[in-house]
Length: 462
Image (cartoon, rainbow, N blue to C red; front, side, top):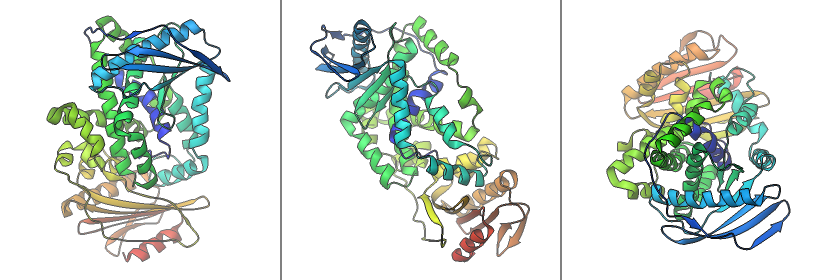
């Protein structure tokens, strides 16, 4: 549902929000590593960073780890971090069951340069005007208060607690300097990101995910993100369980001590959506491993789930239950721009309805999802949305329509309903809303401009 156009921002979230999930988990046990590192070799300096290449012996192959570091950092600190990263690469290989094809490039930055790198990603990849439209249509759906600053919220959320990330565009692991060495929680996070680098080498997920950003419907992208993050999250949990009891307790203590003030103050649906690829992705990955081991996880990159429905119910992935054919119901608004054409999917519908229904009720109402398609229009400050849904059966469409009725009455400022043409018309408030069910299909229209809403309804013949 939170579908930013940049995969780099989503992997920044991995660094921040995986910590929230880790904070709920502790592990115990001990392990040893066979990683060794020779003395750093040739060093070259360019600009504000220094690149050091050092051979590293792992359990599977000899790697040369190229480390680029801020010039401000003490070379001894860089060398210590480099040794720790070499050991953690071996840990990543062991918990994931795959060898690195080549050592990932590593960038170690001081605090100022790390913050600048994160800020640069936002400046390049987050369009403030696009996010402003997202804010308006989500407010129309009753998911945000009017005038909410979603752009500022994204910046605050995606920078709160970032302790390192994998930049697929550059093929780099970016970590802030740890002068005293990585803490137990930082090691867990670094393993998570190293698994991203590892699986990207084997399955080119970064390229596939980019294609879904450009060509997918949103729901398929969310499904694939659950594969990527669920895999790395599971690996980081396995690594957490190998820590000594003392380090495991310290990792948990660190996680619970993280300042999540911004996260905790956001609407519940945003919290759920940001955690979705880690929580639901982890559950999905565990189900895949239970059925086919780590080889089954490998297969999910090659033949990934195409809907969030398949992620939420692993059995539907196994049998290949895809979306139903959805009859075409094209609409247009003269003088308006199309902001987005996409699919909410089962997960997206849960998020919308979860703002006004109990969690179990929202889950039940969305569970009969067969397919959906929605279009968001914009003109100036006005927005309009038309949603076309088909359920697995007529009863599923009835349940969704009933859930939308409850949601509209609770969360959308459209006034009392009146029966109109077999559906329900809400046009006594500031917004226009129309809802109708036709057999196993549901049509939902909402607009800040009542004329545009009526036009969309007329085009659908409802």
